[in-house]
Amino acid sequence: MILEAREIKKQYHRDNILFSAVNDVSLSIGEGEFVCIVGRSGSGKSTLLNILAGLLTPTSGSVSFEGREYGGMNDGELSRLRNTRLGYIMQGHNVLSNFTVLQNVLLPHIFFKRDDDPTDRALSLLEQVGLRPLASQYPSSLSGGELHRVSIARALLMSPGLLIADEPTGDLDEETVSEIMGLFAGIVSKGTAVLMVTHNSDAASYADRMYTMQSGRLSEM
Image: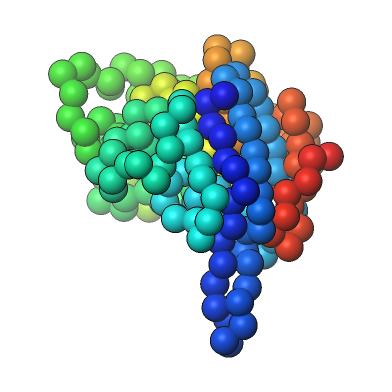
């Protein structure tokens, strides 16, 4: 398994009452699997993804990636993991306004400088998401859907073993949703696993396994 979560729980105090945003969730994802989670807003999906991406520490339980538990990693090691092996597409656009589209896609390489030049790969990814002609543009000139596609290309730059995507098809028209899901299906066929949260039933239909999340609990459909 590339990712394993065991009995994950995340609790908060709300008005002096203990509240469980994620409640005893266990999930395993193998290489090249496409897993989808659906559920209403507030059901705990984004909190769970933040835990699985190592951005949020669970109250209890454990998460391991490629056999290594997050609890044994420091912040720098978790950051490098997300930079090299775990791509994360958060909700919203999450692009830097003072960087061009191409520069935004190249950010993973900029943060952890390497000897290779990934520009050709970045341009190829922009071609795949339909943004190659906009490589030199700034985010202010792009639509919401185009900004989503920049985030997707950036998450794929380093060829991650697992891509976590939180509502990656939001603000996209039907044709673009089909193109993006085709891109995801293509990377899955090459061995990259995908974990996606979505409200889009057409997008969810691409998954090998589907789960529903309700009141912090995950159930396979």
